[in-house]
Amino acid sequence: MIALLFMGLGLVLFIISLIFDDAKDISWFSIGLGEFIVGILMFAYHKYEVYKQYLTLTETSIKKNTLFGKEVQFKDVNQVKEFANEITVISKSSQIVIDTEVIQPESLKRLKKALHNKRLSINKIEVN
Image (tube, rainbow, N blue to C red; front, side):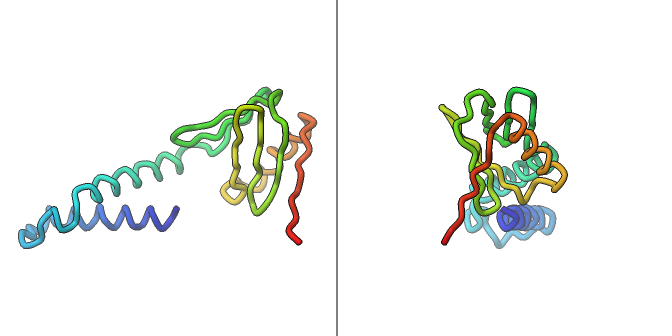
């Protein structure tokens, strides 16, 4: 994800340098207008994720705040799995995969405590 951010940011900076340096010998088509637009969109998406909280935990549900966010009601949860720095919350109709590396340690403790308080045990998957 970070690599995509730098790629998008680099492309945007390159285009801006083309605009302000009057580099007429390089055409827009050699770079691709689509790549420029995708670079801007990727940068905007990264900014959205940085400033928006990753998870919203309420009394009745857990919501992952991404561009197309998902929400799972605790009453519908069938299973909770933990494997490779991810917690997967599986319900009857959907599932949420939570990346535990982007959550602050104190918030991760609160998440696990909330899952435990809702009588949802976390199944740790071990690889032999």
